[in-house]
Length: 173
Image 1: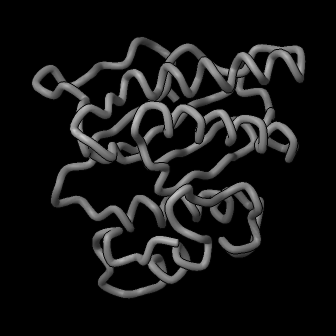
Image 2 (image 1 turned 180 degrees about the vertical axis):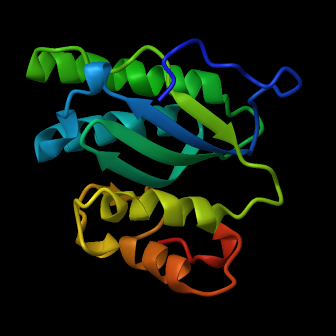
């Protein structure tokens, strides 16, 4: 995982109803997210930042030393850079207060999804990460994955449906 300054797209302003695949790594790749209390705390702060900065968390997965998020701006004034900053700031502050150590590496990874890219393929990648890492045998066995928009059943139905290419075909819950 790169930890140097991220290169943003020079012709893209990161505002509006766009989808982004994000990865944040813990400082020193510390296994902060083996603990359900830490996952719950950080997830809550991510959702707080998402609500405040007009983002939906389509899918997330907390791995032991990093987290994957697929987020989407809900309005034209949604600002990804503000959301990322707030999500890491809120969660890092509360994590350090509760667990006594810093949480995040300085930079993360982001990818803007193009309009023709399949949202469900990114959801599938995110949800399958624990299986690929040997932390679970099946996607639905892993308790540190989910969505702020869809139930796990809806995510699983979408992932398992052949030919599904966009999340609007998933029913919101």
